Image 1 (cartoon, rainbow, N blue to C red):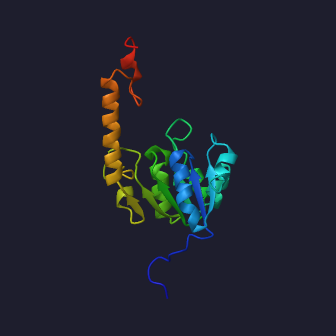
Image 2: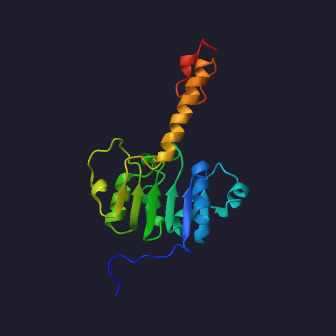
Length: 192
């Protein structure tokens, strides 16, 4: 007899990726050797590009119905806020796992918590929550949720790269250039 929760091979399972920008593409690359079927929902990316990564473009409803694992990598905007809500969870396979390293508000946290409690969703790995910084909530204490405080990107190499990029930006500006990744462009008005 098995003790605890069963562990399944990834082979022949279905990975659904929502959002196929740089990170979504890297996720597909990393999982290809495990022989999963990879399906992708991203209305802004051409199916030919998706197929280059060994994946298939599908509609959101198809991804939700077929996926054993759903990994979210999309930006937060008016179209993606609560993209995963009560209705979307209802059509998912029983026992699906959800991974969210994008933005917390893409998943309705109450819907996710209810689905975990009802055992519709087998587990979730979250690097983000709807409220940042989070207050202690039921979702943070749920047994089948792994939560990290928005640090999925963090590694020794990432820290080194961030420092190099920051130094390059400072150098560029000191030499009279414009910053490449300026969040508040309005500060440059009249200086251009």
